[in-house]
Length: 115
Length: 108
Image (tube, rainbow over all chains, first blue to last red):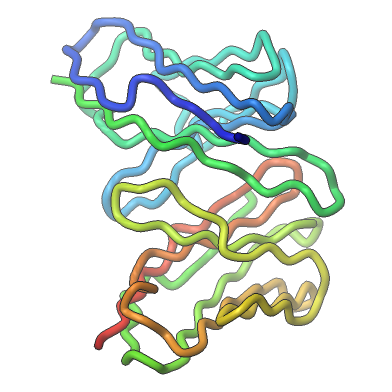
């Protein structure tokens, strides 16, 4: 089954404790992206990647890191989480085929609380 | 900066009516256009994709694209209470840019 998986789905942590949210896709997609979603602010892009070893900042990259060492994985790293990073996070992937197959698929979301 | 603009709503329509959702975008080089539906706390799910000027119909949904005017719209015919959700417009030129979404409420 084609899917994007994220782990963990729920996480409560404390300020300053490094954490990683994993994201994996099984569709051989070139493009992967991380978003955060907060009430009233819509989906805001954190980082995106057009292919292996190619990453770029989105709208709200401060306080986050990513890596793309393999095509299927795109982990989101919070080196020193703060309470303002409490949010619902989505990972997504798609082909970048300029034809008809660049639909973006979303993971189920990770709800993060930083105390 | 590439932007995608949507009216945040809420848009309220009676059951059975046509709901019309609009979106404008700033990048004339955009190639692909999408409408997603999102229920509260859930992942966005794809409703429609459209790549060429004109209309594309899928069941009760019709997407309309006008590249010259840089807008894309979504019509929902025979609106149902289950259509109540936030609708996100997304536009791709390499990266995929989302609008903030329009909240639709369909009243029984």
